[in-house]
Image 1 (cartoon, protein in one colour):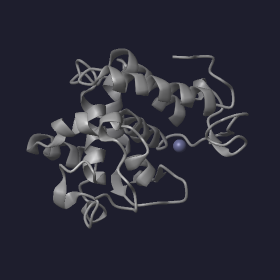
Image 2: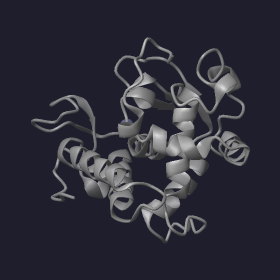
Image 3: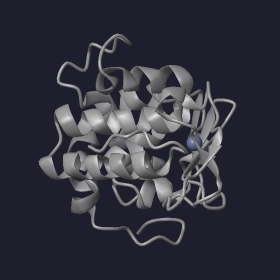
Length: 222
Ligand SMILES: [Zn+2]
């Protein structure tokens, strides 16, 4: 039984079954809880959001932990999170250093997540519409908003809403969409401790971002 009036989608397809087999371990819970700033925000994760049942991948907390696992361990040499390396390596560190509070809520309009001054709220589309690598993308995207906001309107034909605010001007802006797409690209190309099906989903999602989230198309296709 989920929360927020949601029906839990196929957990094999979303990666929640795969990652859920790993996160149900005290050592991971003890690492994720303070590192990704659930700590200090417990009241946002109780009352049906999973705190009382943190291995249950029907619930938001375990589904967030799945994203934390992907974010933390998808590089082969994940202990090297130097910013000189690949995004797959440093994304975990970037999120760690740029999100101060991580909170769950059911909804805020159509937002997937929202960053207000380093406090990031995650909404039901994050937990139940996005697959696990897509959730890791969102964490990195929101972390990037610590430095940069969106600065353009979505282009013609964008699945994010043609003409609406919320796009980045171009790839070189190095904004939240670029960070997310870059992460997914690396996850697809070199992701470890995942499956070929999830890597393919990451590739597809990266292309959706590349095609729809930049006013000026980056010119890439993965
Ligand atoms: Zn954004």
